[in-house]
Image 1 (cartoon, rainbow, N blue to C red):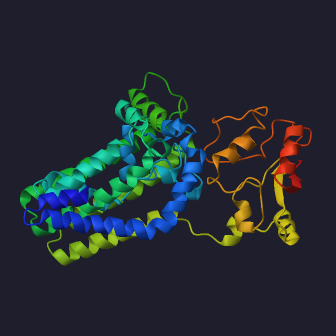
Image 2 (image 1 turned 90 degrees about the horizontal axis):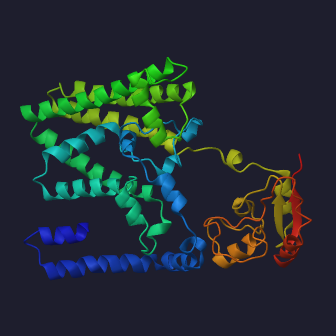
Image 3 (image 1 turned 180 degrees about the horizontal axis):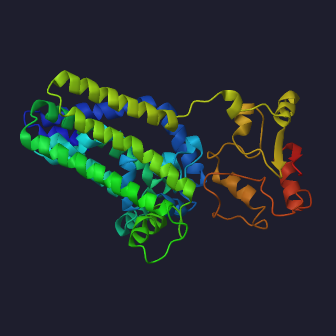
Length: 409
């Protein structure tokens, strides 16, 4: 879309040559990627993703409009890296954070640089992509359309385009601020900073007011507003936040507040170089702090610890498969251990194989209504003996299982 937009927005360009040039770029890119794309397309075509329903994912990942708070305060509901995340869905699938200071300049650009066609393009791009993640009648209808691939994706992953668009706008905004910086622009930026600070202060007051009450009732209007609405639509249906969760939120509101307040102070400095240097340093510090929690780097021995069961399987040095019951060794573990499990690779497996494994739970009947991302045979019901089911035993024989691991506490 951006390529087409640029070709037809620049009047001096030769349209035919430009279309041929851009088309050749896409053809070359797809050709170079074909070694990965073609097997991926084949794997997708044979996987259950094209037949299994994924609407439960849209119920979880189509977000409320109040999710816009996460753009300013990404950890308003905690962070899984420090084991205090209490939001909905997976944290990594719902994050749309580019940094507090870049966001401020992006908003500044949206309102101040609409005469620039590129700025308008990325403003529209940011708004459309963000809107497509919201839980609304239109998005629910759009994602229910029988279009190829569309019903198989998590809608919130489009945030990568929202973030990219906002980042481009941020660059335009900072450039405009450094070039003009008129009295009107200064007043507008101060007004924007004031509004954001007020939002954080109101949120802080709301959370503190909850923290001071053990019980909620209809008499306190602030309590009625702040979290019974916010909590129901953003976190968990019908539950009140705990004191620990409120404390986590209050703590994570502090950094955005400091960033906004610091930018307000920096605008006082007349020297352009001091302002640029300070903004870059503040942005980098904020991004490194966020990255340290978002992309956790740990010691491999903790992520893939040695285990006597896996060591035993590795010592066999054979192609025989294993299956574990009770507290199972989940799919994908065997890849790192270089052993062989009947549960294979999650989520790449043929739908026919998924149907075969799921038939055990379905009294031997084959159905298309199978899990879309896991071919699992290790699940057992309460007090179920894995060796008393004749169908399961025949299937284990068919699949070449030599070792059955059973955890009994």
